[in-house]
Length: 345
Ligand SMILES: *[C@@H]1O[C@H](CO)[C@@H](O)[C@H](O)[C@H]1NC(C)=O
Ligand SMILES: *[C@@H]1O[C@H](CO)[C@@H](O)[C@H](O)[C@H]1NC(C)=O
Ligand SMILES: *[C@@H]1O[C@H](CO)[C@@H](O)[C@H](O)[C@H]1NC(C)=O
Ligand SMILES: *[C@@H]1O[C@H](CO)[C@@H](O)[C@H](O)[C@H]1NC(C)=O
Image (cartoon, rainbow, N blue to C red; front, side, top):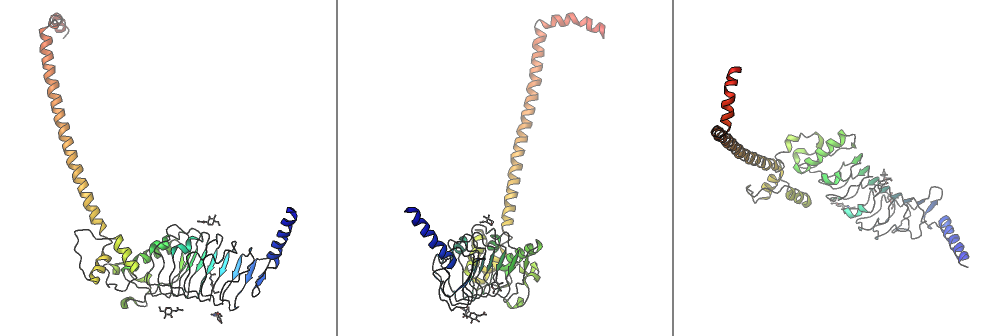
Protein backbone atom coordinates (compact mmCIF):
# COMPACT_ATOMS: atom_id res chain seq x y z
CA UNK A 1 0.00 0.00 0.00
CA UNK A 2 2.68 2.40 1.10
CA UNK A 3 4.89 1.36 -1.81
CA UNK A 4 2.16 1.93 -4.36
CA UNK A 5 1.50 5.36 -2.95
CA UNK A 6 5.16 6.19 -3.14
CA UNK A 7 5.32 4.95 -6.74
CA UNK A 8 2.26 6.96 -7.64
CA UNK A 9 3.62 10.13 -6.11
CA UNK A 10 6.99 9.71 -7.80
CA UNK A 11 5.27 9.16 -11.16
CA UNK A 12 3.28 12.35 -10.61
CA UNK A 13 6.47 14.11 -9.61
CA UNK A 14 8.27 12.86 -12.75
CA UNK A 15 5.32 13.85 -14.91
CA UNK A 16 5.44 17.31 -13.42
CA UNK A 17 9.17 17.51 -14.00
CA UNK A 18 8.93 16.36 -17.60
CA UNK A 19 5.66 17.94 -18.67
CA UNK A 20 5.17 20.72 -16.13
CA UNK A 21 5.87 23.74 -18.21
CA UNK A 22 4.04 27.01 -17.50
CA UNK A 23 1.55 27.82 -20.25
CA UNK A 24 3.29 30.93 -21.50
CA UNK A 25 6.82 29.53 -21.37
CA UNK A 26 8.89 27.20 -23.48
CA UNK A 27 10.75 24.49 -21.68
CA UNK A 28 13.85 22.90 -23.07
CA UNK A 29 14.25 19.70 -21.12
CA UNK A 30 17.82 18.62 -22.00
CA UNK A 31 19.30 21.92 -20.85
CA UNK A 32 16.62 22.41 -18.19
CA UNK A 33 16.05 25.92 -19.48
CA UNK A 34 12.71 27.72 -19.27
CA UNK A 35 12.06 30.65 -21.54
CA UNK A 36 9.26 32.98 -20.48
CA UNK A 37 10.53 36.06 -22.25
CA UNK A 38 8.30 38.59 -24.04
CA UNK A 39 5.06 37.31 -22.58
CA UNK A 40 3.83 40.47 -20.93
CA UNK A 41 4.20 38.76 -17.56
CA UNK A 42 3.62 40.87 -14.45
CA UNK A 43 4.78 38.16 -12.08
CA UNK A 44 6.74 34.94 -12.03
CA UNK A 45 4.79 31.96 -13.42
CA UNK A 46 3.72 29.81 -10.47
CA UNK A 47 4.36 26.32 -11.90
CA UNK A 48 8.01 26.38 -12.94
CA UNK A 49 9.71 22.97 -13.19
CA UNK A 50 11.68 22.54 -9.97
CA UNK A 51 14.78 21.27 -11.80
CA UNK A 52 15.15 24.46 -13.85
CA UNK A 53 18.72 25.65 -14.27
CA UNK A 54 18.14 28.64 -16.53
CA UNK A 55 15.19 30.96 -16.35
CA UNK A 56 14.56 33.64 -18.96
CA UNK A 57 12.16 36.31 -17.79
CA UNK A 58 13.47 39.17 -19.89
CA UNK A 59 11.26 41.65 -21.76
CA UNK A 60 8.32 41.39 -19.41
CA UNK A 61 6.60 43.82 -17.09
CA UNK A 62 7.48 42.38 -13.74
CA UNK A 63 7.59 45.33 -11.34
CA UNK A 64 7.70 43.58 -8.03
CA UNK A 65 9.06 40.35 -6.63
CA UNK A 66 7.97 38.89 -3.28
CA UNK A 67 10.38 37.43 -0.76
CA UNK A 68 11.40 33.86 -1.66
CA UNK A 69 10.20 34.54 -5.20
CA UNK A 70 12.30 31.71 -6.63
CA UNK A 71 11.82 29.14 -3.92
CA UNK A 72 10.27 26.69 -6.42
CA UNK A 73 13.47 26.59 -8.51
CA UNK A 74 16.28 26.08 -5.99
CA UNK A 75 18.78 24.75 -8.56
CA UNK A 76 18.74 27.87 -10.69
CA UNK A 77 22.12 28.81 -12.17
CA UNK A 78 21.10 31.65 -14.48
CA UNK A 79 18.34 34.15 -13.96
CA UNK A 80 17.62 36.77 -16.57
CA UNK A 81 15.38 39.66 -15.56
CA UNK A 82 16.61 42.03 -18.25
CA UNK A 83 14.14 44.73 -19.38
CA UNK A 84 11.49 44.52 -16.70
CA UNK A 85 10.05 47.20 -14.41
CA UNK A 86 11.63 46.33 -11.08
CA UNK A 87 12.10 49.41 -8.93
CA UNK A 88 12.70 47.77 -5.62
CA UNK A 89 13.99 44.42 -4.43
CA UNK A 90 12.84 42.99 -1.13
CA UNK A 91 15.84 41.74 0.91
CA UNK A 92 14.72 38.09 0.83
CA UNK A 93 13.84 38.00 -2.84
CA UNK A 94 16.72 35.74 -3.94
CA UNK A 95 16.65 33.65 -0.83
CA UNK A 96 17.27 29.98 -1.47
CA UNK A 97 19.21 30.49 -4.71
CA UNK A 98 22.32 28.86 -3.35
CA UNK A 99 23.57 27.90 -6.80
CA UNK A 100 22.81 31.02 -8.79
CA UNK A 101 25.81 32.02 -10.88
CA UNK A 102 24.49 34.66 -13.26
CA UNK A 103 21.98 37.34 -12.36
CA UNK A 104 20.96 39.81 -15.02
CA UNK A 105 18.99 42.82 -13.81
CA UNK A 106 19.89 45.10 -16.69
CA UNK A 107 17.38 47.72 -17.76
CA UNK A 108 15.05 47.93 -14.81
CA UNK A 109 14.29 50.89 -12.56
CA UNK A 110 16.23 49.92 -9.46
CA UNK A 111 17.44 52.87 -7.41
CA UNK A 112 19.28 51.26 -4.52
CA UNK A 113 20.44 47.89 -3.28
CA UNK A 114 20.91 46.41 0.13
CA UNK A 115 23.84 44.29 1.19
CA UNK A 116 21.50 41.62 2.57
CA UNK A 117 20.31 41.04 -0.96
CA UNK A 118 23.72 39.73 -1.96
CA UNK A 119 24.24 37.55 1.08
CA UNK A 120 21.75 34.99 -0.20
CA UNK A 121 23.78 34.46 -3.40
CA UNK A 122 27.07 32.91 -2.29
CA UNK A 123 27.95 31.35 -5.65
CA UNK A 124 27.20 34.36 -7.83
CA UNK A 125 29.80 34.94 -10.54
CA UNK A 126 28.20 37.57 -12.76
CA UNK A 127 26.01 40.40 -11.60
CA UNK A 128 24.67 42.80 -14.20
CA UNK A 129 22.97 45.89 -12.82
CA UNK A 130 23.54 48.15 -15.78
CA UNK A 131 20.92 50.59 -17.09
CA UNK A 132 19.06 51.11 -13.85
CA UNK A 133 18.58 54.16 -11.68
CA UNK A 134 20.92 53.12 -8.91
CA UNK A 135 22.36 55.99 -6.91
CA UNK A 136 23.31 54.09 -3.78
CA UNK A 137 25.14 50.87 -3.24
CA UNK A 138 25.98 49.34 0.14
CA UNK A 139 29.20 50.71 1.62
CA UNK A 140 30.43 47.22 2.23
CA UNK A 141 29.12 43.69 1.95
CA UNK A 142 30.48 42.65 5.31
CA UNK A 143 31.90 39.35 4.17
CA UNK A 144 33.78 38.77 0.92
CA UNK A 145 31.89 37.71 -2.17
CA UNK A 146 34.49 35.27 -3.32
CA UNK A 147 33.06 33.92 -6.54
CA UNK A 148 32.05 37.18 -8.16
CA UNK A 149 34.13 37.85 -11.25
CA UNK A 150 31.90 40.20 -13.26
CA UNK A 151 30.28 43.28 -11.78
CA UNK A 152 28.46 45.65 -14.13
CA UNK A 153 26.93 48.87 -12.88
CA UNK A 154 27.27 51.10 -15.93
CA UNK A 155 24.49 53.52 -16.91
CA UNK A 156 23.24 54.31 -13.45
CA UNK A 157 23.21 57.37 -11.21
CA UNK A 158 26.21 56.66 -9.02
CA UNK A 159 28.25 59.62 -7.84
CA UNK A 160 30.74 57.60 -5.90
CA UNK A 161 31.65 54.05 -5.10
CA UNK A 162 33.11 52.95 -1.86
CA UNK A 163 36.40 51.17 -1.96
CA UNK A 164 35.27 48.80 0.77
CA UNK A 165 32.52 47.48 -1.47
CA UNK A 166 35.02 46.65 -4.20
CA UNK A 167 37.30 45.07 -1.66
CA UNK A 168 34.51 42.66 -0.76
CA UNK A 169 34.81 41.29 -4.30
CA UNK A 170 38.37 40.00 -4.18
CA UNK A 171 38.15 37.99 -7.40
CA UNK A 172 36.36 40.44 -9.64
CA UNK A 173 38.04 40.63 -13.06
CA UNK A 174 35.56 42.59 -15.15
CA UNK A 175 34.15 45.82 -13.87
CA UNK A 176 31.84 48.09 -15.84
CA UNK A 177 31.44 51.55 -14.43
CA UNK A 178 30.92 53.99 -17.25
CA UNK A 179 28.00 56.38 -17.72
CA UNK A 180 27.32 57.23 -14.13
CA UNK A 181 27.25 60.64 -12.47
CA UNK A 182 30.77 60.33 -11.13
CA UNK A 183 31.68 63.19 -8.86
CA UNK A 184 35.43 63.49 -9.15
CA UNK A 185 36.33 65.13 -5.87
CA UNK A 186 38.62 63.85 -3.17
CA UNK A 187 36.00 61.30 -2.19
CA UNK A 188 36.61 59.47 -5.43
CA UNK A 189 40.35 59.31 -4.89
CA UNK A 190 40.11 55.96 -3.12
CA UNK A 191 38.25 54.53 -6.13
CA UNK A 192 40.99 55.84 -8.40
CA UNK A 193 43.69 54.23 -6.29
CA UNK A 194 41.77 50.97 -6.13
CA UNK A 195 41.25 50.96 -9.91
CA UNK A 196 44.92 51.58 -10.58
CA UNK A 197 45.82 48.55 -8.51
CA UNK A 198 42.99 46.55 -10.12
CA UNK A 199 44.26 47.30 -13.63
CA UNK A 200 47.84 46.64 -12.61
CA UNK A 201 46.80 43.19 -11.43
CA UNK A 202 45.16 42.43 -14.78
CA UNK A 203 41.59 43.53 -14.12
CA UNK A 204 39.56 44.96 -16.97
CA UNK A 205 37.38 48.01 -16.65
CA UNK A 206 35.81 50.64 -18.86
CA UNK A 207 36.14 54.32 -18.09
CA UNK A 208 35.06 56.38 -15.12
CA UNK A 209 34.25 59.69 -16.76
CA UNK A 210 33.71 62.60 -14.41
CA UNK A 211 30.43 64.46 -14.63
CA UNK A 212 31.16 66.97 -11.89
CA UNK A 213 32.75 69.23 -10.75
CA UNK A 214 32.99 71.37 -13.88
CA UNK A 215 36.79 71.39 -13.82
CA UNK A 216 36.93 67.66 -14.42
CA UNK A 217 33.79 67.24 -16.48
CA UNK A 218 34.41 64.76 -19.28
CA UNK A 219 37.80 63.75 -17.90
CA UNK A 220 38.75 60.18 -17.15
CA UNK A 221 39.22 59.66 -13.42
CA UNK A 222 42.31 57.57 -14.06
CA UNK A 223 43.99 60.36 -15.99
CA UNK A 224 43.66 63.04 -13.33
CA UNK A 225 46.94 63.23 -11.38
CA UNK A 226 46.79 62.30 -7.70
CA UNK A 227 48.31 65.59 -6.64
CA UNK A 228 45.25 67.46 -7.79
CA UNK A 229 43.09 65.70 -5.23
CA UNK A 230 44.77 67.09 -2.16
CA UNK A 231 43.65 69.32 -0.75
CA UNK A 232 40.16 68.66 -2.05
CA UNK A 233 39.62 71.64 -4.35
CA UNK A 234 35.83 71.57 -4.42
CA UNK A 235 33.59 71.46 -1.41
CA UNK A 236 31.14 68.67 -2.07
CA UNK A 237 27.78 69.87 -0.87
CA UNK A 238 25.67 67.30 -2.61
CA UNK A 239 27.71 64.16 -2.01
CA UNK A 240 25.70 61.12 -0.97
CA UNK A 241 25.39 61.39 2.78
CA UNK A 242 26.77 57.94 3.41
CA UNK A 243 30.02 58.89 1.77
CA UNK A 244 30.46 61.93 3.94
CA UNK A 245 29.48 60.05 7.06
CA UNK A 246 31.86 57.29 6.21
CA UNK A 247 34.74 59.66 5.74
CA UNK A 248 33.73 61.74 8.72
CA UNK A 249 33.67 58.79 11.05
CA UNK A 250 36.77 57.16 9.63
CA UNK A 251 38.89 60.30 9.87
CA UNK A 252 37.46 62.26 12.71
CA UNK A 253 39.72 65.21 13.45
CA UNK A 254 41.64 65.20 16.69
CA UNK A 255 40.29 67.21 19.61
CA UNK A 256 42.84 69.95 19.15
CA UNK A 257 42.33 70.60 15.46
CA UNK A 258 40.38 73.71 14.56
CA UNK A 259 37.15 73.09 12.68
CA UNK A 260 35.09 75.62 10.85
CA UNK A 261 31.33 75.33 11.12
CA UNK A 262 30.74 75.97 7.41
CA UNK A 263 30.02 72.89 5.35
CA UNK A 264 32.52 73.75 2.67
CA UNK A 265 35.31 74.18 5.14
CA UNK A 266 34.38 71.02 6.92
CA UNK A 267 34.43 69.06 3.71
CA UNK A 268 37.71 70.67 2.95
CA UNK A 269 39.16 69.55 6.25
CA UNK A 270 37.73 66.07 5.74
CA UNK A 271 39.50 65.82 2.44
CA UNK A 272 42.75 66.91 3.94
CA UNK A 273 42.38 64.60 6.84
CA UNK A 274 43.87 61.56 5.21
CA UNK A 275 47.49 62.35 6.05
CA UNK A 276 46.52 63.49 9.54
CA UNK A 277 46.91 60.20 11.38
CA UNK A 278 50.62 60.35 10.60
CA UNK A 279 51.51 63.38 12.77
CA UNK A 280 49.64 61.71 15.63
CA UNK A 281 51.65 58.56 15.06
CA UNK A 282 54.80 60.61 14.80
CA UNK A 283 54.03 62.28 18.10
CA UNK A 284 53.51 58.87 19.62
CA UNK A 285 56.79 57.70 18.20
CA UNK A 286 58.66 60.72 19.50
CA UNK A 287 57.14 60.28 22.93
CA UNK A 288 58.08 56.62 22.92
CA UNK A 289 61.66 57.41 21.95
CA UNK A 290 61.97 60.08 24.65
CA UNK A 291 60.55 57.82 27.33
CA UNK A 292 62.74 54.94 26.24
CA UNK A 293 65.76 57.26 26.28
CA UNK A 294 65.05 58.51 29.77
CA UNK A 295 64.45 55.02 31.13
CA UNK A 296 67.62 53.73 29.48
CA UNK A 297 69.57 56.68 30.90
CA UNK A 298 68.32 55.99 34.39
CA UNK A 299 69.08 52.30 34.09
CA UNK A 300 72.57 53.09 32.77
CA UNK A 301 73.25 55.49 35.64
CA UNK A 302 72.04 52.90 38.10
CA UNK A 303 74.24 50.28 36.54
CA UNK A 304 77.19 52.65 36.64
CA UNK A 305 76.51 53.45 40.28
CA UNK A 306 76.20 49.75 41.03
CA UNK A 307 79.45 49.07 39.22
CA UNK A 308 81.29 51.81 41.07
CA UNK A 309 79.86 50.65 44.36
CA UNK A 310 80.72 47.06 43.51
CA UNK A 311 84.30 47.93 42.63
CA UNK A 312 84.75 50.07 45.70
CA UNK A 313 83.26 47.42 47.91
CA UNK A 314 85.44 44.75 46.33
CA UNK A 315 88.53 46.90 46.77
CA UNK A 316 87.71 47.70 50.38
CA UNK A 317 86.95 44.08 51.15
CA UNK A 318 90.11 42.96 49.49
CA UNK A 319 92.09 45.46 51.46
CA UNK A 320 90.39 44.50 54.68
CA UNK A 321 90.85 40.79 54.01
CA UNK A 322 94.43 41.35 53.08
CA UNK A 323 95.01 43.22 56.31
CA UNK A 324 93.21 40.59 58.30
CA UNK A 325 95.14 37.79 56.64
CA UNK A 326 98.32 39.65 57.36
CA UNK A 327 97.43 39.69 61.04
CA UNK A 328 96.53 35.99 61.49
CA UNK A 329 98.44 32.76 60.90
CA UNK A 330 99.00 33.34 57.23
CA UNK A 331 101.85 35.71 57.74
CA UNK A 332 103.81 32.86 59.31
CA UNK A 333 103.59 30.84 56.16
CA UNK A 334 104.18 33.88 54.11
CA UNK A 335 107.15 34.75 56.16
CA UNK A 336 108.28 31.18 55.82
CA UNK A 337 107.79 31.24 52.11
CA UNK A 338 109.23 34.66 51.76
CA UNK A 339 112.89 33.69 51.59
CA UNK A 340 112.13 30.87 49.14
CA UNK A 341 110.27 33.18 46.91
CA UNK A 342 112.99 35.66 47.10
CA UNK A 343 115.50 33.00 46.38
CA UNK A 344 113.50 31.82 43.36
CA UNK A 345 113.08 35.34 42.08
C1 LIG B 1 11.58 45.57 -23.45
O1 LIG B 1 10.42 44.78 -23.31
C2 LIG B 1 9.29 45.26 -24.02
C3 LIG B 1 8.15 44.32 -23.71
O2 LIG B 1 7.90 44.32 -22.33
C4 LIG B 1 9.58 45.30 -25.52
O3 LIG B 1 8.48 45.81 -26.21
C5 LIG B 1 10.80 46.15 -25.75
O4 LIG B 1 11.14 46.10 -27.12
C6 LIG B 1 11.97 45.66 -24.91
N1 LIG B 1 13.06 46.55 -25.05
C7 LIG B 1 14.25 46.16 -25.49
C8 LIG B 1 15.29 47.22 -25.57
O5 LIG B 1 14.50 45.01 -25.76
C1 LIG C 1 22.42 40.77 -19.46
O1 LIG C 1 21.57 40.91 -20.54
C2 LIG C 1 21.98 41.85 -21.50
C3 LIG C 1 20.92 41.93 -22.55
O2 LIG C 1 20.60 40.66 -23.02
C4 LIG C 1 23.32 41.45 -22.07
O3 LIG C 1 23.79 42.41 -22.97
C5 LIG C 1 24.33 41.29 -20.95
O4 LIG C 1 25.56 40.81 -21.45
C6 LIG C 1 23.81 40.33 -19.91
N1 LIG C 1 24.72 40.31 -18.81
C7 LIG C 1 25.34 39.20 -18.37
C8 LIG C 1 26.24 39.35 -17.21
O5 LIG C 1 25.16 38.12 -18.88
C1 LIG D 1 15.56 57.54 -13.07
O1 LIG D 1 15.89 58.69 -12.30
C2 LIG D 1 15.68 59.90 -12.99
C3 LIG D 1 16.16 61.02 -12.10
O2 LIG D 1 16.85 60.55 -11.01
C4 LIG D 1 14.23 60.05 -13.34
O3 LIG D 1 14.05 61.23 -14.07
C5 LIG D 1 13.80 58.86 -14.16
O4 LIG D 1 12.42 58.93 -14.42
C6 LIG D 1 14.09 57.59 -13.45
N1 LIG D 1 13.78 56.48 -14.33
C7 LIG D 1 13.07 55.46 -13.94
C8 LIG D 1 12.81 54.45 -14.99
O5 LIG D 1 12.65 55.33 -12.80
C1 LIG E 1 32.50 29.58 -4.69
O1 LIG E 1 32.27 28.53 -5.59
C2 LIG E 1 32.83 27.31 -5.20
C3 LIG E 1 32.64 26.31 -6.32
O2 LIG E 1 31.49 26.54 -7.03
C4 LIG E 1 32.19 26.86 -3.90
O3 LIG E 1 32.76 25.66 -3.47
C5 LIG E 1 32.42 27.93 -2.83
O4 LIG E 1 31.74 27.59 -1.66
C6 LIG E 1 31.91 29.28 -3.33
N1 LIG E 1 32.31 30.31 -2.40
C7 LIG E 1 31.48 30.78 -1.50
C8 LIG E 1 32.00 31.88 -0.62
O5 LIG E 1 30.36 30.36 -1.36
